[in-house]
Amino acid sequence: MKKIINAMVLGVTVLSGSAYADTTLNLVEVITSPKRTELLKQQVAAFEAANPGTTVEITSLPWGQAFEKLATMVSSGQAPDVVEMPDKWMGVYGNANQLENLESYYKDWDHAATLSDKAQNMGRLVGGDLYQIPYGFYLRAMFYNKTLFKQAGIEQTPHTIEEFKEAARKVSELDGKYGYCLRGSKGGHGGWLMFSSIMNGSADFFDSNGKSTIDSEGSKQGLSLLVDIYKNGWAPKDSVNWGFNEIVAGFYSNTCAMLDQDPDALIAIADKMSSEEFGVIPMPVGPSGKSYPVIGFAGWSMFSSSENKDQSWKLISHLTKPESNVDWAQFVGVIPVHKGAEQDQHFSSEQFAGWFEELNKPEYEPLVFPHHLKQFGYFADVKLIEGGQELLLGTRSVDEVAAEWSEYLTEAQTEWLENKK
Image (cartoon, rainbow, N blue to C red; front, side, top):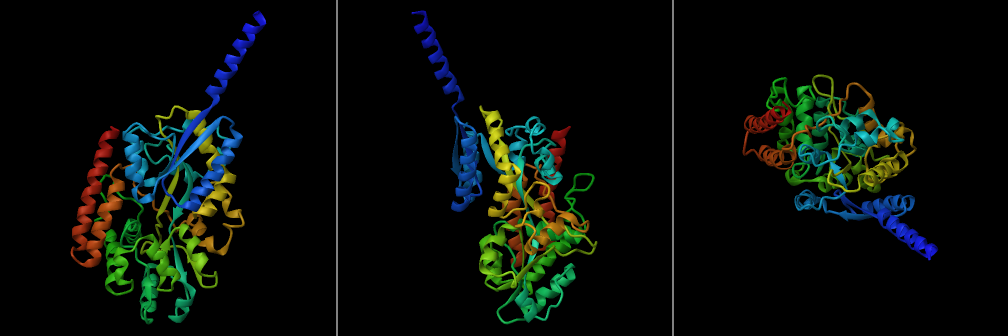
């Protein structure tokens, strides 16, 4: 009888232990496409195989509604354990103390030593704490059409802003061709901020008193540069409404000869054009002799409300370890985050030389947006686009729009500084 009771107790113990070990993690993907989601599922399946008893449920949100849908999930108490976190959103959730500080996990991570300094810095942009492990950089460089350059008589690729303008002018003299694929609609904020920084000769968005620099004379010259390109007819007239798909199609269809874009554009362009037809060079330098190509990033974060933090960290570390990261970066079109990635056969090709030159040469200083501001997402997605289109269409002046943008950013920075005290 005693043996039977002991066996029953042991059985209950085993069953309860098994039930305790069974864990379900919720992961939300926000930069979604069918093929991308399939790769994520493959990497998650490998994680599940290595962690018996843990299941990962993936929710893929369409990018156009992702911010609103995720915000609704969080506000209703249904925040996921792990989330794909774009740079613009870190300030929103990090400043609200809704993201888990990953520092304690990171210091014991087997791959901490190979994560690049830049990736670590990006993950700590909000409050100096590590709120995400980035999986890649979206770094701007200049695509150029070798065929159109040759037809326009351009012998050297542009290194300076003046050479960039001259190349745009020459190509635009060809029948039905334009020098530059301008992004006037969704996602176009990067162009306005990048060219204003290049012409201003600084990557600083604020002065020592917390005032925005976007209404400085140098920055306004950068805004005027894009306005002049559009008004001169060096960019297609309908580019005022162009987003990512339109500018990329404009380039590979030989409509316009230059395009500043991240490595994710390389996937579609390389599918339509041969390496003999296009190249990628660093962004042109401004009057200061320096250039400030926009650098964006995304990565994996953990919500502090997660009830399975240890397993959530295991999932993040699996998705961002070097082997997973190289495969992911190649597929989605980002620069990998681990040291030595440029030695990989895929990233050592001529097409990636422009991006790694920007990362390694002192005349190029990647431009990091003020993601510490919770208002920056709205500023980038709404105010910059609306104001930029008004500039292109000539309904408002550069002075007016720059003053409005500066006031908005200064108020946001002032609030942030006050909250730090």
